[in-house]
Amino acid sequence: MMMYTDSSRGLNFAKDPAVVRFHDQYYMYYTLNPGKAMPQTVWGIGIARSEDLENWDKIGDIEPVGELEAPGICAPGAFVYDGKVHLFYQTYGRFEKDAICHAWSEDGIHFTRNTTNPILRAEGEWNNGRAIDADVCVFHGELFLYFATRDPEGEIQIQGVSKCPLDGEFRRDSWKQCCEDAILKPELPWEQKCIEAAATLCRYDKVYLFYAGAYNNCPQQVGVAVSEDGIHFTRLYDEPVLRNGDPGSWNSSESGHPYVFEDEDGRVYLFYQGNNDNGKSWYLSKVEIQFENEMPFVKKEEA
Image (cartoon, rainbow, N blue to C red; front, side, top):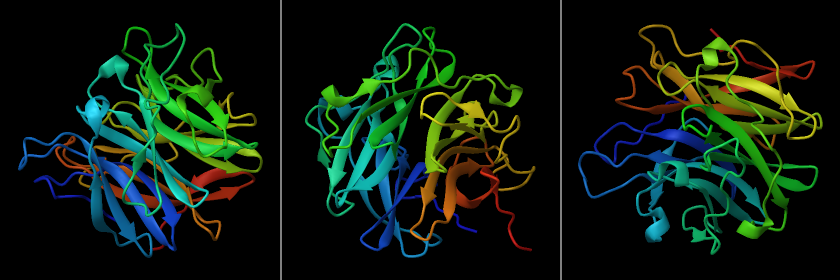
């Protein structure tokens, strides 16, 4: 079983994975904590590379740049378009002012910022303005970006969506919010007060949206909904498609913050974070997702 963490800053810590295939290798981007050994550091994004999706080697960090990113950056979403890796990530530590930024890279390691950053904030009276946990997918010829925000009181985490032309620039003035209310908000008991970390897959002319329900370690678990237009979603199950682990297992505190990656052979993997110490450490792993009658499920591991 894949198990990855980053100890470069004095803790075992890797959260919020995003995976792409680029130049015949796999790149994984993830949230990196400020750490204990280097108190001058802030939240950043780590980069790991793999040839088989199982064994990962760290190859770099993306450090904050400029005043906007000074408190930190995290929670990347990624996709490859026109020979470049495009990263959509959030500012950190500004609470309701946190927003989505964009950068691109020709080698998967060194990134150039979008000059119009931040490219996206939540709009409307139904939210408090923040936009975090970006994930993107190409659907019906446009780029859809899903983000988490909160209700006006800042207590309930909910989901929104915007879209823009697939032009490779993704500038701030290109984005149009597609919803006038939350597209998903907590309704089921296990979701508690939070739906976040949208992870999308386009298949059967639909958008499948895997999401994290409940705040970290409450426990956070993964659900799934589906849409025919990318905006209006219906849950496929009342229970999590991926649960936290049994007591004593590595992910007993949570299985959270999913990311869906479809490989060139059509196989689909759900990457996610977990821990068993209520958030003192964080590890990344994956499961394979399969479909039956257009319904996704987690493939059982062979004994």
